[in-house]
Image 1 (tube, rainbow, N blue to C red):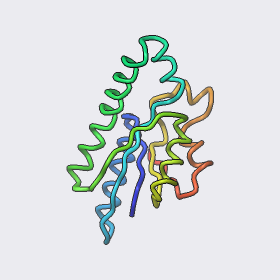
Image 2: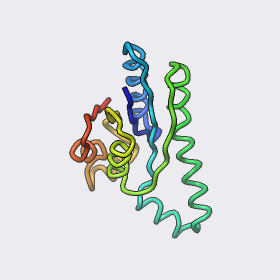
Image 3: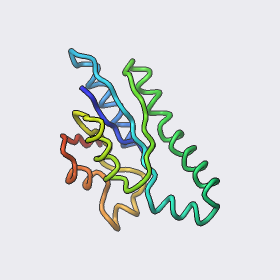
Image 4: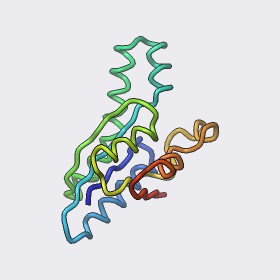
Length: 141
């Protein structure tokens, strides 16, 4: 089974990684994981206007790597093969596009990310992904 796991470094996202590692560990056939971290358009725009493009890009790349580090460590300790994608754009759209492009069997994501205030204003990434996805979506608390 080929899983795409959205990771923003939140506890909910790490729970999704833990669940996926446990799930794949119980499967009779080996599975693989691709972690995805997405820089939101609005965050990129604000950061670039505040500190300039190069500094913003460096900061966002470092933040992505930080967000993915613990997820990678969890998968390493479970012996689950994995890779990571870092994309830029509308978060839900990028997750769904990556799932389609990579022909993933399922998208796994935490039910609550870090952007609680944004979720109140425009709705959660989890809700938008589940509405847009063409493959099954598993939300983990």
